[in-house]
Length: 161
View 1 (spheres, rainbow, N blue to C red):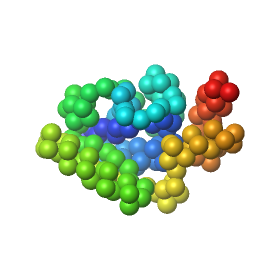
View 2: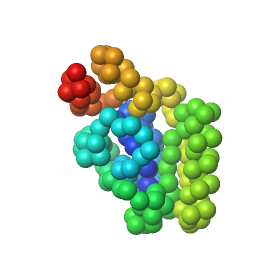
View 3: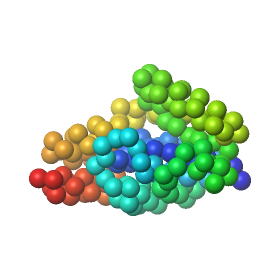
């Protein structure tokens, strides 16, 4: 069985993330979407919330599962017996970040390949930060995320005032 780990913060998960995961299942038997617990970012949702939202979002993707982690990504890949890390690429600026991360991960564990999937044209403009900004300005980002995430965003921003 060929397993891949698709790491990210998924704050929140978007249609772009789900598209990458679905497409990765064409290459791998199982895709583990791994929610990073300790990113160096300001997050809107807690790890538990991100994981729950992701699990609901992937119910239609039978070969995809969601977990959280707080260690090195290559260690998570090794723990799941993954042969690859999957990453999505939207823009040229994403390339630099992904390239550097791939080099680091391949230095830490040369046995784990890095597979980068180009974002589909339909979703290339979608980012979690844009979704958060749209929702924070009072507009439901229905074009970019599943309905349960729209509702979670409404609730989160209502709590914040």
